[in-house]
Length: 610
View 1 (cartoon, rainbow, N blue to C red):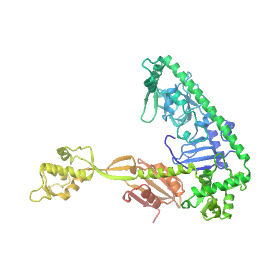
View 2: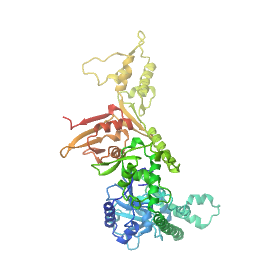
View 3: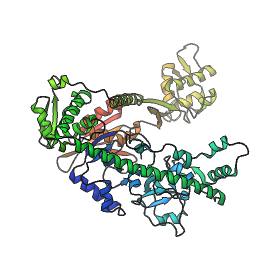
View 4: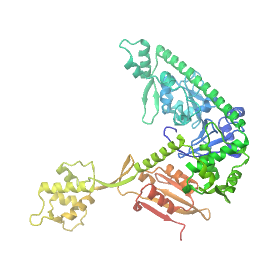
């Protein structure tokens, strides 16, 4: 889930109703956690933020703190605790115990957990259903190292002989979600590599020839425990372990448990210190200080991140994406601690000074930033701070533009030999299984002509057809009873020969390339009516041009400010993107400009027009 870097497209505070809904969902999904436990993680008076990522994952946490829960589909049903939350409440989830430290190196490397890697207690496998959230622990360690979803029920697992994938890992120690937390807690970077992830091959290469029995035992453990790592990133652990090796692994696991337990206690103490520090800072700030910080953060945002091309802008977006990131380090801004009490009143106050222009959206009931007076004395007198954050953002923007340029679409028509022209290819020694461009295919037929000396002596522009070449060009294409031609003009030879080959298309986007047989399918964009006068726009065929439907749905949702969904095509392979509203022309323009799809490959059908 967090193996690849995904940019958060939005971050905002939850309203009171959304906070209650989140807590209800957590209470229902994790019955092991009491109300007191949930309040300990999400204090009633604390501001809870949600970060929305482009892959539809939502991450929840207390503002200024650690990510505590994440929702994999953005709909609220598939919610899981993070490793941070499990270190606070280790018994929130049931857990699978690993056989030893050697297995954990693969789990926290991003691999899924297989049943042979699980240590089954004497009383047998615990009962569970498919799709349940479970944690992963190492022997003797109370702190979980990963969390995931079961792939089958316990009954199905026993029926399969405890083989196959047990847990699809969603989040693990040291993944990108963990690494994204900066300035709070930096785990001991050496303990996992030194204890849990000790590489026997490295040990063997650095041990003298008369290495101790313990080192040999550990190498044997690795060979006997780790059976294979499949292509999907899952691990399998098989084989019996000798008593001596088991004892060695148990010692390593106990050491790992002590280290992780120490880290877990450090997390709690560090989080408590940070919370206490923030409470002291907030309580020490007067109303005038909060107002001053608000004004400075607004001016900093107007100078650095708020561009005129982004206006009009919702007040909530201005606050969460521009004002809050500009706050000084160690300061948590709370509009309720200011003299204005509400965001809308603060923005109206800045409007009265002439710095900005704000109007209320009648439909959304939200203040909208309309314009910025960049000639205002406050704006001109303010000198923005040069912060490292701005450089990071600029680097990210340049990387994004470079990534877009590297993912330019290229469509090339290529050809493969067919039964009609195979004799020509065989005669000149050409590979019949290879793909050829039009010019390369034409060169092959002219090599054959040169080899067989088929150019007419009295007219060099004409080729005399022998039996092999005549069959390659015309066999099956001439009606019965018609006379086969005896010669052909050179200018017609190439096109005729290529038409007898199998047409393919090579589609390349960035470093990804795919060859598709036959005519290239177009992207279909269709608008139709739903429930009266409501319109919906459907986009399908995106896979042909290596476009991820999920990523496009997220882009269009943000671009058109409307809801989007991705569904399977009824009765066909592939996915389609459903967009609320009649945006057929805008979608076609977006695919043309942003994804480089040629116009001839975009098919538009508006069923709402008469």
